[in-house]
Length: 229
Image (tube, rainbow, N blue to C red; front, side, top):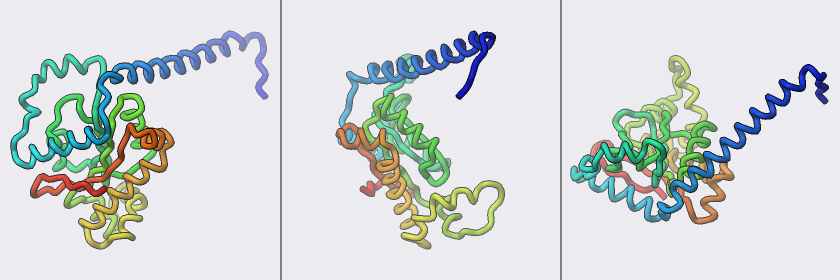
């Protein structure tokens, strides 16, 4: 139990006021985000179809996103964003998510980390992208030649903090290693399942039918994304 003297009262009132302001601001942000995209609601099936249609255009070298008026898009997204989908991708520079799905400014909410693994920060980010911004699908996207997965399979000593990736990738290595493609695919499925089950926010949206979490594999050579279920 904390005791406060009279001289501390003003400071305590100020602290409580700040807490109230922060809580109110957070609630207002949540409400504003929901209101902003309420009339733009898209079903999970439609969102996934839109991603995959875009990837088909990318693989066929028939991009349409560059034809969009970027000045208008910037103007429309200055004050708010309404992404229809979210993607958890690896940091690999060969996997430019917006290009892979032929999407432009404000369309896709992207979280990136080596090995496309779920961390508390990544989960929190994707909760924001869905609960507040309204993304209707989350795809965990593995890719060919993933260096993080390759390193986890080898399990060798590495410099700096790189070995911190080994533990989150261990389940996939044990399931499908040492085959790199199979392990990368297994990891995407495992991380998608973690998202679906470890976050009450995401689980509630899945149960309500307003969110789908899936896994995909991007082939560097063909440019095609295969759905892994």
